[in-house]
Length: 166
Image: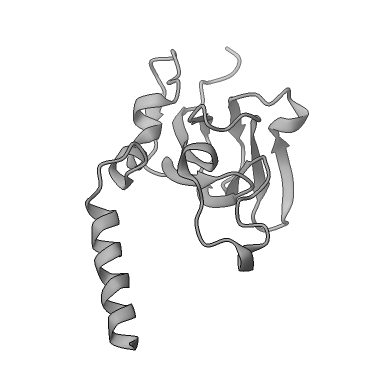
């Protein structure tokens, strides 16, 4: 019986990875490159710390950004329409665990630009608002993808800080 259950699990896992649904891994993998609004400032360059991922409502995730002195940064978020509430983005000083920016205090802005005066490690935290489909996980074994799951993109751009003054 145990071997049968393992075989069923493996076959279902293989079947899921072979599907070509809208929320396939490849669709979300570069979501930030294809859906987030890039800066119109020609001096901004793509930062390889940009990320995309598959999220469910109620999920929170963070990624590290090493921000260097003498650079300006622009962080943009984008998401699938399945999320009916704004996405929360926070920029947190990793060392002091202090929130430096929270877009929920800025009318849920989809982008944020800032200048770094001293190199700093930052957490970029993304929170998808809504009731998690995992609430009461003991009683739920499936998540309906079309209403609870979607792609979120985090586009990070940078440029050398323009010289100030004469």
